[in-house]
Length: 288
Image 1 (cartoon, helix red, strand yellow):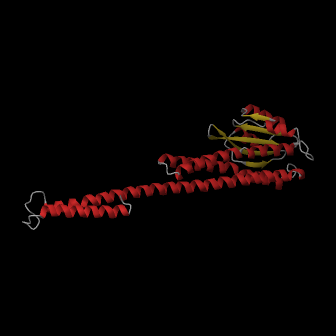
Image 2 (cartoon, one colour):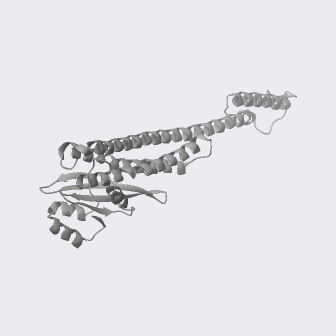
Image 3 (spheres, helix red, strand yellow):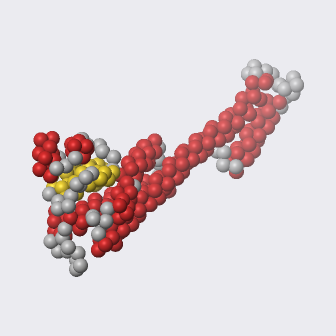
C-alpha cells in the first residue's frame, strides 16, 4: 500500500487496523525524521530520506515504511513519481523469488537508492561546469565562489541522506532474517553496495569541490598580488622623478650646484634615462 502525505486521521486509522505501535505512528505523522530502522513487536518501522532533481535543484523528501508479516505500507512525504515501478516489478518476479513482503521491501529500498544516481550525475555535471569556468581563464569572482559553496552544502545534505541507507540495509541483512530471506540476501547486498558507491561518489565530489574552492581563492589572491605589483611598479616609476624634482624645487636658475648652465637639461635627461631603465627592469620581472 502506498499513501502520499496522508493526514493524521488516516495514519491513526491505519495504525488501529494494522495494530501499529504508537511511537511508530508518531514518527510517521511528523516529518524531518532521521533515517532509521526501528523494530517493534509485530512490525518494523523504517524512515528513509529521498531526493530527486526538480528544475535544476535538489528536492528532499521522506518515505516511512511499515513492514509486517503480510503487508508493506509506504507513506511518502515528497513529490516524486511514486512506487509504480515497484508494483510492476512485483508482478514479474525473477525465477526462485516469491512475490511476498521481503521482495516488496527490497524493491522499495532499491528504488529509493537508485534515485540517488541521477542526482549524483547532475551534481557531477554541475561541478564540471564550474571547474571549466575556473580552468578556462574566464573572469570569475564572488559569484563562482558562492556557487561552489552552495554545491558543497548540497553535497553535505546528500551525504546525510545517503549514508544511513547502508546501516538500514546492514540491519536487515544481519538482524531480520524474516525480511532478508536467504533467496534475497544477494539482492539486499546489492542495495548496500549501491549505497556505498553513492556515498563514495558524494565524498569524492565534496573533496573536489573543496579543492576547487581553494583553487579559486588562490587564483583571486594571485590576481590581487599581480595588481598590487603593477601598482607598486608604476608607483616606483612615478616616485623617481618626483623625488628628483622635489629635491631641487620648481624655481631655480642653472641648478644644481648652483650655477651650472646645463644642469636643467642634464637633470631631465638623467631622470628620463633612469625612468626608462627602471621601466625595463620592472617589465622584465612582470611587475608592469
